[in-house]
Length: 210
Image 1 (cartoon, rainbow, N blue to C red):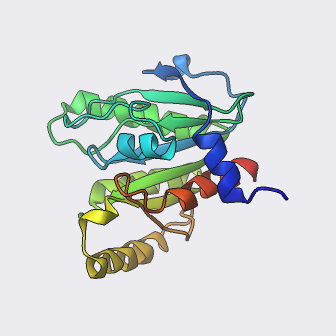
Image 2: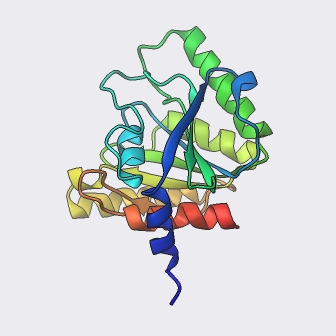
């Protein structure tokens, strides 16, 4: 009996996962020889925590209470032999960052999105307590213009009441319908409670195999 997509995805993402490298500039990108799945989100949206939860690790991605700590593209090899890579993109929307840093982030991310043929899917993380903010819309528009397919992922879904989560889901779904590259499937997750992780892992593997 063959494993389901969810089970194959679980085995792969909780199996061999290794940090490969950080790329502060495009010239440091790894060779585009395997599919890539990128994660984007506002600073402190819970991106590092979600990557750690997806891979059943505690310290795969660095977590920090300091907004804007990650200012490089971080690459992680998944599987042996390597099946694909996870890409932890720099957090965006931090109010304290100097304009030069914000502009550097924009150039790096925009160039990566537009020029990376092996990028199969991006997952844009939205805090369930905050909903979509203007800076999220900017990144969604950037992905639309780069013709990169992406899903929206609600994080910290355990931090809001069920009725509030449903309201946020509906608002986010309505917003996502306005964006041509946004995939209609929306995920609600909790890194602490494990909510939505199985479905998100399956979506990652499905995107890789398409």
